[in-house]
Image (cartoon, rainbow, N blue to C red; front, side, top):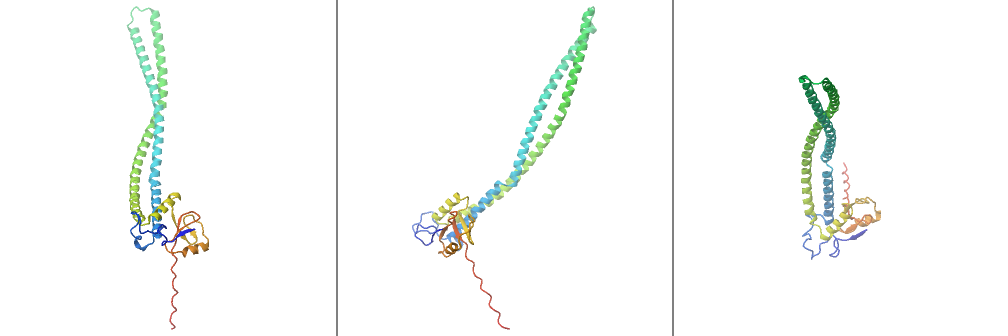
Length: 285
């Protein structure tokens, strides 16, 4: 452990020298606390701020919105696949309909020629009749092929309609979650704003060197720059100190800055418990 008393030379942590810089505190922390007590409160506020920021990032509304967004993307992907398959079949159906129409037009034209024929050689009439029968057979094949396409299209149309409905439901649910998330974020942001302002005000009462040392440690040690000495244990690294060392620390002058040799955090002893006097014996009856 390393320590420096609060009434040490003017460069000791926790002491405001007479020629203090402009950013030094003008007096002791409010409420009659020592600088180290105020430092622990700043640490508690920093912990609270970190917890609120974590809560904000891990809001269940945010997780649900992420889930809905992923589900909406997946529904969109499946819808695009169905529409692609449907587009190919619809294109095939249109080709068949065009070919059926052309076959019907050709057959009708030949039938009209046969009915209007006068003096046409029998060989030519036979050729036209053969072509008409061929066109009829071809139309039957094309209509059968079109029917198969229509059968394939039917489930795709049903799936497409289902996916459209799913997409509408997901978008509505996502919009509700966005509103809920915005409300939850607003609530946490209000708490953060209050806590950050209070933290800044209290941190401003600390001596500059102590504050800078704390900020450096907090940045380097995962957000905790100061820890309580609770019993024999450092609340920062959760390691126990030897009993003799703990006793020595507790008998140092008030305001002495102690550093945990295990983790390097500023270590602040908890106040010693005030002994409760034993009750006076009752007077004899």
